[in-house]
Length: 453
Image (cartoon, rainbow, N blue to C red; front, side, top):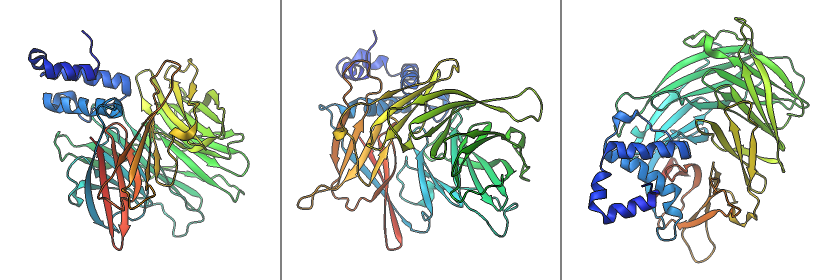
């Protein structure tokens, strides 16, 4: 007998024999596998590290976010934890991203990265882990141009959660890239954290340019590092196979594969979505490209265009985190009216990529200053007018899995009593229904972790 999760919970409450049959590790591992296949979720550790109770909690939390909270019969409430930090600890960070699992939040700044463990009590700064990186042995004393760009990738081939993150910057006539690896501790426990270490470093020469309006975007995979330099006219993409520099600390100079990209002046997003496949988005087009390894040793790889997806509208400057599945990867993009479209890129390169637009009035969609967009959720923090009402968090869920003609989003509003000001939203995880906000006053920055339960 095959039961959906809500039916399973109902039967467990009414049938003791069935309840006892579900109290096994294998029963919950079967549901873990279904969630992996349906939603692209992954366990942080190997399956053998988990108890039956931990697996049940892991599965239940995710099904609650997928189904339960959107039911009128089971409305959610908010659970809030707060941490006050000296403002200098969190100063300088400008990009935030949850790792898969919704426990660890990556914070990127100009000179360092920080990892915040949001899974515990967050009662003191011990929930923070510094992830340093350095270009010190190649930095020039004077910088003709300086822009910092970060890229991060989760390695799905590892038995436990691990990720790579890269920083690239330009000083005079040299681009410098440092790639670090963060590995989850060997012991599965509530206070586990990541251990960072330098993974690879390299430099490459700056191509002479006359463009005044100049910037770049980057992407990272477990083998390649890609960079698009956005120029006043056309742009160029360069891809580096940094695998030969793993373990090197002397920043060897690399020669990359380079192609010109016509009309890519406004390219704003570049992501590896599977091994050597990457997507580049600009205006109303999404290009799907492949990096092909050559058989000649030392010869740069070849960059080949696989598909071009023509959108119905200009894309807004945001692309959701990639949702990775065994057969394909998906990512959500947004237009200027906050309307989403779901891009599907098969891992079989002969199969065409395609997108599914969300064609419905924008009344359902959050807008405003403090908002966040994701793969299948969007959220907005608002302060209703009236006689001192509490802040309200609006949640919208897109039914990407729907196959019928009805394509109506789910929408819920949850009040946030006794927490005002709540601050600005930094990031959220739709996998576990968690968002992080911050509010600064004087020399203190208050971090709040807010869970849907």
